Structure formats: structure tokens, C-alpha cells
Image (cartoon, rainbow, N blue to C red; front, side):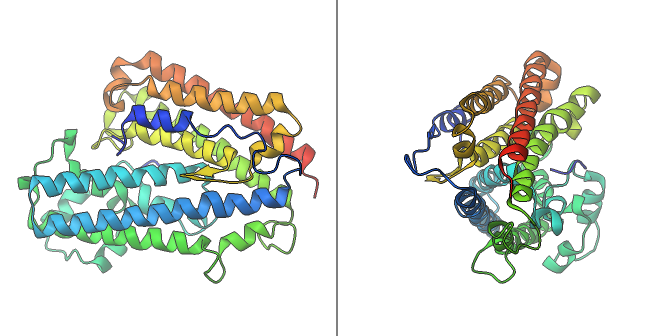
Length: 357
């Protein structure tokens, strides 16, 4: 996320987002949902399953690259490319709650810095430097993580052929994906309730002994603040910077032509947080607290999320091309995401007023 085709089709992504259950206190119809239940389920229904999924997808990418290294043919390359696209889904959705260990230990820049420094990357491959896992662990952020892997797997323009992957490039890919798996595993462990000093414990004990969150209000403001942050990041950095510069080289996920899917998954991740869903799981959530006191605010937020997803899906070519040919669609999508940001500011005011402990 730091500035330096989905596995599913874009259409199917929208279908999934649009068909998320519109919960109307469906978990408990008579007993009010408590703030504690929302915090518990935020950690255990959304965050931990999301990071478990991310770890699984990182392992699948690592194994696909091992297979490609053993037999460098196009079918294995395409499988590794699909695995790269697949891991972007849980990662980008997790950016809807980008706080805690992912910030504390710089996991975000260590895995998702962009654009790729292709000059230094190509120089590294051309050098005699070893490319073991230990070497990759010591590299600057721009030379490791999702996007150097993307560059090597897809190539400029997304037209990589397996015959272009030298022994050195394959060595680098193997170590890059191993490094990514290790970082993602540490991130997952840092939230895992079964691990010592896990961040889940800090969140669910907010206001009850948590070192990180003195009150439950602090925890909820952090969650809503992360939702606001991803709106601003998508509309006013990820989308805006290459549009203003008319420079496709600074588009995120440019080699895989995955940028618009990345942006959409960011908003789906925000939706997961508000609606208390991840995959097939669902739990108590912010929606439950809001709808109990303000159906109008709840409807506004849910409606605006859907509008934002639809607006992003209107950008129906790769974003590196869209900045030249679909500026109207981009402007419209940015405007709707900024409106969502304003709705979330009202949600922050709701937290300030209604969560008093």
C-alpha cells in the first residue's frame, strides 16, 4: 500500500460484494448487541480469518513458484501468476483494518511497497550477489514483497513468457516468495489468540486492562479511523497520483493489470468490517450498533459502500490505460469514495456519542 485480474473476475467480485448478507441484527433479534461482542467478532470473525487466508494464499504462491523453478514452462508460470492474483484478494481486503502489528512492525511497507525499483532490481539480478532467503530479508522494501514478485512473474505489459525467466530470476522468485510467506506468517501469528502477546487480546480487552486501548471507545475509533484511511488512500493516492501525473508506471499492480481489483478489494474489506463478514463467516459488527440507534446512518453507509464498488467496476479496462481513456469513470469513482469517507466521519461521531466507556 505504501507508495514507492483478480483471481475471480471483476464481475463475480461485484456479485459477491453485492450479495453480502444485509444483516438486521440477525444474530440476536431481541437482545441488543453489545460493544464487547462487536470487538470480539471483529477480531475472531474478520481479522484472524482474513490473515489465516492470507497466510494460506502466501503458501500457495510459494509452492507455485517452487514448481515453476523446478519446471519453467508456461503452464507453471500461469499457475504462479494466478496464485499471485489470488493472494492480492485477502491482502487488499485486510487494508480495511490497517492498524496494530501490520503498522507496528512495518509489515505493510515490507511487503507492499511500490512502484518497483526496476533499475536496482535488474542490477541485482545481473550481479554476482547471492539471492538466498537471508539476502532477500536484508533488502530494501522496494526490492521485496508483492510487487517485485509481480514484476518477475508478469513482466512489463503483463506479457511474460517462461523462456524469459533466467536461473537468477527464478532464484530470486523462490527467495522472494519464501520471504513473503514468512512475513505474512508473522503477521498472522501476531493476531493469533493462541500465540503469546497476541494483538487480539489487546483489542478484546479494550477498557478492561488493555495496554493499547484504554477504553472501548479508543478501539472503535481506531477501527473507524482505519476505514476512513483506506478511503482516502484509494481515492486520493492510489487512484489520484497516476491520474494527475498521467504516468502508468506508478500505478499499483501495473504489471498484472490488477489495480482496479486491488482498489475494489480495499472497499470490500471496509464493507467486511462494517458488516461483520469474512468469507462465509459473519458476526456482530458496527452495523448492528448503528442500526439499533440510527437506521438512516446505517442505510447511508451501506448504500454508499455499494455505490463505491459499482463505481470502481465502471472502470472496465486496466487502470494504467484508464488514466488516459476513462478519466470520467475514475473521477466519478473517486467522488463516491470521498462521499463514503464523509459518511464514515459521521460514523466516528456516532462512536464518540454512543460509546461512552
